[in-house]
Amino acid sequence: MLQHTLEARLSALREELVARGLDGFVVPISDEHMSEYVGDYAQRLAWLTGFGGSAGSAVVLSRGYEGRGAAVFVDGRYTLQVRDQVPAALYEHVGVPQSSVAQWLADHAPDGARIGYDPWLHTAAFVRTLTDALRGRGGVAVAVDDNPVDAIWPDQPLRSAAPVMLHAHADAGEDSASKRARIADALSTAGEDSAVIAALDSVAWLFNIRGTDVAHSPLALAFALAHADGTADLFLAAEKQTPDLAAHLGNAVRLHDRDAFVPALGALGGKRVRVDPERSVAAITQALESAGATVVAATDPTVLPKAIKNRVEQDGHRAAQVRDGAAVARFLHWLSVTAPRGEVDELSAAARLHAFREDTGLLVDTSFDTISGAGPNGAVVHYRATEETNRLLEPGSLYLVDSGGQYRDGTTDITRTVWIDTLEGTAPTAEMRDRFTRVLKGHIALAAAVFPEGTSGGQLDVLARQHLWAAGLDYAHGTGHGVGSFLCVHEGPARIAKPQGGQAGTAHPLHAGMILSNEPGFYKEGAWGIRIENLVLVEPRALPGAETGFLGFETLTFAPIDRRLVEPGLLSEAERTWLDDYHAQVLRRIGPQLDGDVLAWLEEQCAPL
Image (tube, rainbow, N blue to C red; front, side, top):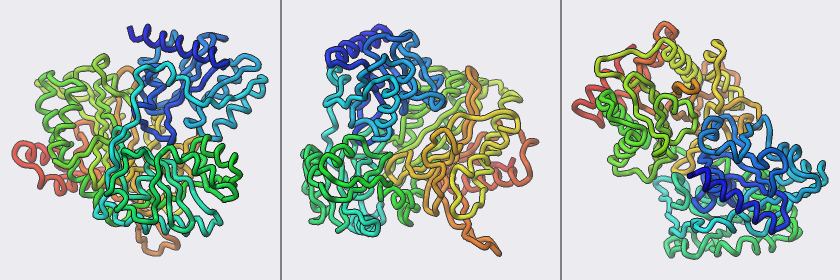
């Protein structure tokens, strides 16, 4: 039934492309802000192909020129997921970065093809790459005025009209005027008149506002222009504006309807305008260039200061992590009692975890869709349980749960892999314990790292992989991503990952105040998956005799790591000490929030190895 529906949608899009004189069209997961997670109205790829991941794209040729004439492009995180969700009879499954949209079109598009793209959903760099690839076939990239997918999507959701929420100074730690002054100084120093602020989390941070327009991310749909004189223009739908918002922002911020954004770009002729090439869509650059503005391609000036959390934000994160850790501990205890009876499945487990977080009374939202993977589903890196894929947490198997919460004082993200015991009591296999312990050793190596200022995440990534590599093993995702402060769970500019394959941010230096994840893993396809994830805060480290500044990590996440999956003989003395010390901190920090059987269980889980 689903394949029939997807086939009908694909056919409808092809008819629409033919009517528009297009030979093909590119469909990304994206919105006008280059967001990672997008509102329901922008879920065009999922509606068209059935793919539910958070990163990917598709190309549809108006006729099946070669093979299927359509392809879906995903990276290694989604290799298994795309097989399950996107019919191979309709779409070729293409791996990235081994190939790309542009390369595929260079190989498959007909000579002289007119390939459409929505300039509000792609960067200018993508458009250049697409144009170059088609030129070799005598083809052209065609910017569409309106998206052809929207034309065939009869029940497409509308953009959210929810009012903006104000982010209190008690949680932000710095008012908007101070932030705008810092941005103004950066623009003045660079000789720039204005900067386009298009990324939703950048807008939210700069103006100390939040919203409910994107699931799991407290963001409001808005654009902004920040100017070198400290003033700013904020563009958002009229129904989202409130008297409280105007009072919150003050006279130096001019409020406009969202539809006024493009005309405002057109009024910047003769100005030097900074546009972040990674966080702004091609339509913005095209509008400025048409107006006669000088476009300066440079990083959004809010990105680095947003990533470096101030003292208030750091303390807020610590409070949120301890609160969240206690909820996770309650869940893990509940799981230990209930799952061995064979009464828990992936969906009911995720719902129970959400309920424990809601019991804190302070949960605003989850920070992403919970990854609740039992057995072989745990090997799907970004798995999302559905009624169709829902599996029982079978006694005598592994269960991976990756989840997080949005609280007004912080954003959490934690992964635990646990052994689901039987009522009779059984032990994990030797292979499971070996792989889990190698992942744990990598986690510890990264958590304990001390490194000079200027070190990038790409330089640290090998620490987390070394023990897997020694056994000829690896994992196909990054080791760490930045995390926002009641903002996006994935935040730039820095990340910890292999410095290859177009991994953005791997060369960016880590700075004190940044919060990142530490999440090595291992995945045995068709069997089980393992991941251990904590959040860490980059902090200064004073080393006797050091000739330069050094940094290290403060671990922020506190919840027990399943000791049943640890092979003690594989741990060094230092690693055993780290694990025992970590569990002692878990008990000390979250123990006071627990009592009765849950506290007794936690004491047992946190006993020295």
